[in-house]
Amino acid sequence: MPEAYPPSSADARTFGNLVQAIIDDLHRPDLQNLIPRYVRAAIDFYARQPFFFTQIDNTPIQPWQAGLYYPQGTSIFDTASDTNPYIFVVVQAGISGNSKPTFTPNIFISPGPRIFTPGQSGTTVDNGIVWATAKSWPPANLPAASFWSQLSTVPYANQYVPPIDYTSPYLIEITWASLRTPLLKISYPELRAMDLIRPAPVTTFPVNWAWYQQQIYIWPYPADFFPLTLSYYSAPFPPVNATDTNWWTTTAEALIRAYTRARLNLEVIRDTEAYQADMQAAKDEFISLRVKEMSQQDLLIPADIW
Image 1 (cartoon, rainbow, N blue to C red):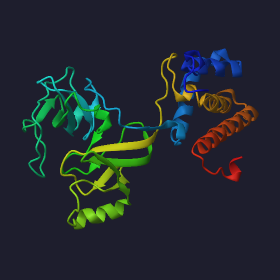
Image 2: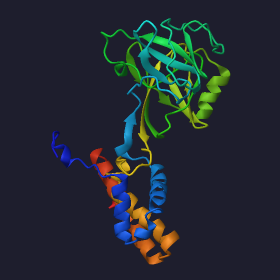
Image 3: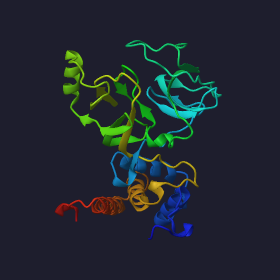
Image 4: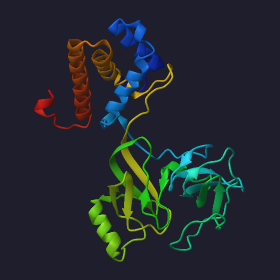
């Protein structure tokens, strides 16, 4: 398919289409109310597998939204009381309020290693959240996503929760002086040793990262707000509504359909032979996706994959 193509050529199969296909495969319309649950279970099973097709990054920075949980370091691009755009960073995690707060245009200046408290100059209270005004963004500049991301370091904090759809890392970068450079992955014991010994840091921004307790740990401790760009494998959310469409209902449709049939044959229909046949079909589809993944990355395909 060329770069440009008719919209009708795009794969837009939905969750409803997937459920109906499984009903047709099994000739069991009486399972219509049960099948969606098994489809989501199949998606949860394969969501643990990192796929090339779900590589994304966290550069599309968003505006403020009501009723969301914002972890520490979450960054947004919105306007302050002076109607000008700024980058705001969460320095105290919490759930946003029902209405947008009046963000202060005063830039936050870190007073040193201390707990952030509501009322500090450069902060805005939003229900249970404390936002810091990290950077002004003149309209004449390039879009915020060019130099910022959805996650930022917080002065003197070294632990950060990754996005909720984070499955496995590909690359973690930090931006300082408008330069984006990769962080070096080290083991948690190495980072912990440096954290305890506290050698004099060679920079005011982090250069290392490690994974522990489902969080990203960085070192040295940052002295300012520095954007963290995460390039990672994502697991798209399981569809809920019949009209929902995503990677699971299009690219991976045959995989999810075969695995769902297998589990239904094993646990509901009690047909072991059909279960084994559908599990083999699911394995074949999984291998096919992995071969395509490796081919697109120009990787050598192991002989046992074929």
